[in-house]
Image (cartoon, rainbow, N blue to C red; front, side):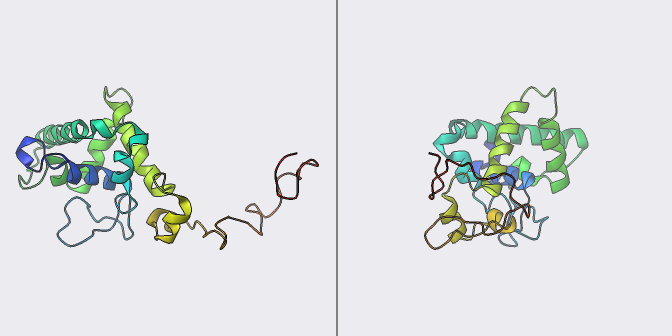
Length: 189
């Protein structure tokens, strides 16, 4: 876990939560929550497990998250200085930015031509994946635990045997006929 002193780059967790919340905003966990800006009425990327996915070894970026958080706070300090904004020294610089300023900074970091663009887009993609696919969890388990992203998007629970069956076609009609060599179980011959 990263440092918790705002003077040396800030709290890794708070900074990464604020970044994830900028990508897919959510409701604050409590009135004292500073990482989540609270600009949305429903849970967002943080509640969906964005930090769990960012830290998952499968992403390949977990080892660089301390550096990412430090860089984000450095960019936030520069951003605030350029815009004449005061920052609360009690929290990391990115967390101290209001939501509109967080968004402006992330927009700049992910813009074509920014030298760090690929890193910021990768982190943003993992935050999005945590919300819209629960990539770090088994889908049935995520649904059973009330995963906010899957629930908000209306993903259906599996049948009691853990499999998903769709009695109605999602487009209201079959898109193709069943191949004649398909077995009764649905497997190709």
